Image 1: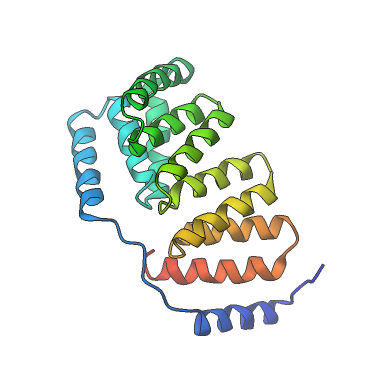
Image 2: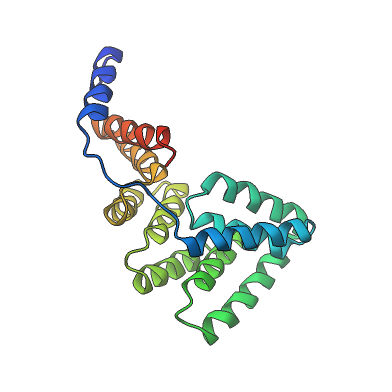
Length: 207
Protein backbone atom coordinates (compact mmCIF):
# COMPACT_ATOMS: atom_id res chain seq x y z
CA UNK A 1 0.00 0.00 0.00
CA UNK A 2 1.39 3.40 -0.99
CA UNK A 3 1.44 5.98 1.82
CA UNK A 4 1.85 9.61 0.82
CA UNK A 5 3.53 12.21 3.02
CA UNK A 6 1.68 15.52 3.60
CA UNK A 7 4.04 17.37 1.24
CA UNK A 8 3.47 14.79 -1.51
CA UNK A 9 -0.29 15.05 -1.07
CA UNK A 10 -0.11 18.84 -1.36
CA UNK A 11 1.77 18.64 -4.66
CA UNK A 12 -0.55 15.96 -6.02
CA UNK A 13 -3.55 18.16 -5.30
CA UNK A 14 -1.78 21.16 -6.83
CA UNK A 15 -1.05 19.19 -10.00
CA UNK A 16 -4.65 18.07 -10.30
CA UNK A 17 -6.02 21.58 -9.79
CA UNK A 18 -3.69 23.02 -12.43
CA UNK A 19 -3.88 20.33 -15.08
CA UNK A 20 -7.32 18.77 -14.75
CA UNK A 21 -9.46 19.16 -17.82
CA UNK A 22 -11.91 22.03 -17.54
CA UNK A 23 -15.46 20.98 -18.34
CA UNK A 24 -18.91 22.48 -18.20
CA UNK A 25 -20.58 22.52 -14.80
CA UNK A 26 -23.71 20.76 -13.64
CA UNK A 27 -26.65 22.97 -14.56
CA UNK A 28 -30.29 22.41 -13.65
CA UNK A 29 -32.72 22.99 -16.52
CA UNK A 30 -35.37 25.73 -16.35
CA UNK A 31 -37.91 22.96 -15.83
CA UNK A 32 -36.06 21.61 -12.80
CA UNK A 33 -35.50 25.09 -11.34
CA UNK A 34 -39.23 25.74 -11.72
CA UNK A 35 -39.98 22.41 -10.05
CA UNK A 36 -37.75 23.27 -7.08
CA UNK A 37 -39.54 26.60 -6.66
CA UNK A 38 -42.98 24.98 -6.86
CA UNK A 39 -42.08 22.32 -4.28
CA UNK A 40 -40.58 24.92 -1.94
CA UNK A 41 -43.76 27.00 -2.18
CA UNK A 42 -45.82 23.87 -1.40
CA UNK A 43 -43.77 23.33 1.77
CA UNK A 44 -44.08 26.99 2.73
CA UNK A 45 -47.86 26.74 2.35
CA UNK A 46 -47.99 23.38 4.18
CA UNK A 47 -45.05 23.38 6.63
CA UNK A 48 -46.43 20.47 8.69
CA UNK A 49 -47.19 18.22 5.71
CA UNK A 50 -44.81 15.24 5.49
CA UNK A 51 -46.00 14.66 1.90
CA UNK A 52 -44.97 18.14 0.78
CA UNK A 53 -41.67 17.78 2.64
CA UNK A 54 -40.92 14.36 1.12
CA UNK A 55 -41.81 15.64 -2.35
CA UNK A 56 -39.37 18.54 -1.95
CA UNK A 57 -36.65 16.27 -0.53
CA UNK A 58 -36.71 14.04 -3.60
CA UNK A 59 -36.70 16.99 -5.98
CA UNK A 60 -33.60 18.22 -4.17
CA UNK A 61 -32.12 14.73 -4.48
CA UNK A 62 -32.08 14.77 -8.28
CA UNK A 63 -31.14 18.43 -8.70
CA UNK A 64 -27.72 18.34 -6.98
CA UNK A 65 -29.03 19.78 -3.72
CA UNK A 66 -27.90 16.77 -1.75
CA UNK A 67 -27.39 18.37 1.67
CA UNK A 68 -30.74 20.17 1.44
CA UNK A 69 -32.34 16.89 0.37
CA UNK A 70 -30.99 14.99 3.37
CA UNK A 71 -32.07 17.72 5.79
CA UNK A 72 -35.54 17.83 4.25
CA UNK A 73 -35.82 14.04 4.41
CA UNK A 74 -34.99 14.22 8.13
CA UNK A 75 -37.76 16.80 8.56
CA UNK A 76 -40.10 14.44 6.72
CA UNK A 77 -39.35 11.72 9.27
CA UNK A 78 -39.95 14.16 12.14
CA UNK A 79 -43.32 15.21 10.72
CA UNK A 80 -44.37 11.66 9.88
CA UNK A 81 -43.48 10.40 13.39
CA UNK A 82 -44.38 6.78 12.61
CA UNK A 83 -41.86 6.37 9.78
CA UNK A 84 -42.61 2.69 9.19
CA UNK A 85 -46.29 3.25 8.49
CA UNK A 86 -45.54 6.43 6.57
CA UNK A 87 -43.04 4.58 4.36
CA UNK A 88 -45.69 1.95 3.66
CA UNK A 89 -48.10 4.72 2.67
CA UNK A 90 -45.50 6.30 0.36
CA UNK A 91 -44.72 2.95 -1.28
CA UNK A 92 -48.39 2.30 -1.99
CA UNK A 93 -48.90 5.84 -3.28
CA UNK A 94 -45.98 5.94 -5.69
CA UNK A 95 -46.26 2.30 -6.73
CA UNK A 96 -49.74 3.07 -8.06
CA UNK A 97 -48.44 6.13 -9.91
CA UNK A 98 -45.58 4.14 -11.45
CA UNK A 99 -47.91 1.34 -12.55
CA UNK A 100 -50.16 3.92 -14.21
CA UNK A 101 -47.22 5.86 -15.68
CA UNK A 102 -44.22 3.50 -16.04
CA UNK A 103 -42.19 6.11 -17.93
CA UNK A 104 -42.43 8.70 -15.16
CA UNK A 105 -38.87 8.62 -13.81
CA UNK A 106 -39.57 11.25 -11.17
CA UNK A 107 -42.34 9.11 -9.69
CA UNK A 108 -39.96 6.14 -9.79
CA UNK A 109 -37.38 8.23 -7.92
CA UNK A 110 -39.93 8.87 -5.21
CA UNK A 111 -40.81 5.18 -5.10
CA UNK A 112 -37.13 4.29 -4.79
CA UNK A 113 -36.72 6.66 -1.85
CA UNK A 114 -39.96 5.38 -0.31
CA UNK A 115 -38.46 1.88 -0.40
CA UNK A 116 -35.24 3.24 1.09
CA UNK A 117 -37.22 5.19 3.71
CA UNK A 118 -38.90 1.94 4.71
CA UNK A 119 -35.62 0.02 4.90
CA UNK A 120 -36.13 -1.95 1.67
CA UNK A 121 -32.72 -1.24 0.17
CA UNK A 122 -32.82 -4.05 -2.40
CA UNK A 123 -36.10 -2.74 -3.81
CA UNK A 124 -34.69 0.78 -3.80
CA UNK A 125 -31.70 -0.42 -5.82
CA UNK A 126 -33.95 -2.19 -8.33
CA UNK A 127 -36.06 0.93 -8.80
CA UNK A 128 -33.00 3.14 -9.21
CA UNK A 129 -31.78 0.74 -11.91
CA UNK A 130 -35.17 1.07 -13.60
CA UNK A 131 -34.66 4.84 -13.66
CA UNK A 132 -31.16 4.41 -15.09
CA UNK A 133 -32.61 2.23 -17.85
CA UNK A 134 -35.30 4.79 -18.62
CA UNK A 135 -32.99 7.81 -18.39
CA UNK A 136 -29.51 6.71 -19.54
CA UNK A 137 -28.19 10.28 -19.39
CA UNK A 138 -29.32 10.80 -15.80
CA UNK A 139 -26.39 10.29 -13.37
CA UNK A 140 -28.41 10.42 -10.14
CA UNK A 141 -29.72 6.84 -10.05
CA UNK A 142 -26.17 5.52 -10.13
CA UNK A 143 -25.05 8.09 -7.55
CA UNK A 144 -27.65 6.92 -5.05
CA UNK A 145 -27.04 3.26 -5.86
CA UNK A 146 -23.43 3.95 -4.90
CA UNK A 147 -24.56 5.54 -1.64
CA UNK A 148 -26.69 2.52 -0.71
CA UNK A 149 -23.84 0.13 -1.55
CA UNK A 150 -21.45 2.24 0.54
CA UNK A 151 -23.85 2.15 3.50
CA UNK A 152 -23.58 -1.65 3.40
CA UNK A 153 -19.78 -1.35 3.00
CA UNK A 154 -19.87 -2.94 -0.44
CA UNK A 155 -17.07 -0.69 -1.57
CA UNK A 156 -16.25 -2.25 -4.93
CA UNK A 157 -19.90 -2.08 -5.89
CA UNK A 158 -20.10 1.51 -4.67
CA UNK A 159 -17.04 2.43 -6.75
CA UNK A 160 -18.58 0.79 -9.83
CA UNK A 161 -21.80 2.77 -9.54
CA UNK A 162 -20.07 6.06 -8.75
CA UNK A 163 -17.87 5.64 -11.81
CA UNK A 164 -21.01 5.16 -13.90
CA UNK A 165 -22.46 8.37 -12.47
CA UNK A 166 -19.26 10.27 -13.24
CA UNK A 167 -19.13 8.84 -16.76
CA UNK A 168 -22.53 10.47 -17.37
CA UNK A 169 -21.77 13.76 -15.62
CA UNK A 170 -18.27 14.44 -14.32
CA UNK A 171 -19.19 17.84 -12.89
CA UNK A 172 -20.90 16.85 -9.65
CA UNK A 173 -18.58 17.33 -6.68
CA UNK A 174 -20.46 14.81 -4.53
CA UNK A 175 -19.79 12.01 -7.02
CA UNK A 176 -16.04 12.57 -6.87
CA UNK A 177 -16.10 12.82 -3.09
CA UNK A 178 -18.03 9.54 -2.94
CA UNK A 179 -15.55 7.88 -5.27
CA UNK A 180 -12.69 9.22 -3.14
CA UNK A 181 -14.24 7.57 -0.09
CA UNK A 182 -14.54 4.28 -1.97
CA UNK A 183 -10.91 4.46 -3.04
CA UNK A 184 -9.79 5.32 0.48
CA UNK A 185 -11.72 2.37 1.92
CA UNK A 186 -10.14 -0.02 -0.59
CA UNK A 187 -6.57 1.22 -0.11
CA UNK A 188 -6.27 3.27 -3.31
CA UNK A 189 -4.72 6.33 -1.68
CA UNK A 190 -3.63 7.99 -4.90
CA UNK A 191 -7.11 7.65 -6.38
CA UNK A 192 -8.60 9.04 -3.17
CA UNK A 193 -6.32 12.09 -3.30
CA UNK A 194 -7.04 12.81 -6.95
CA UNK A 195 -10.80 12.44 -6.58
CA UNK A 196 -10.86 14.56 -3.42
CA UNK A 197 -8.94 17.28 -5.25
CA UNK A 198 -11.45 17.23 -8.11
CA UNK A 199 -14.34 17.38 -5.63
CA UNK A 200 -12.78 20.43 -3.97
CA UNK A 201 -12.22 22.06 -7.36
CA UNK A 202 -15.87 21.62 -8.34
CA UNK A 203 -17.10 22.61 -4.89
CA UNK A 204 -15.04 25.80 -5.02
CA UNK A 205 -16.75 26.64 -8.30
CA UNK A 206 -20.13 26.07 -6.67
CA UNK A 207 -20.86 22.65 -8.17
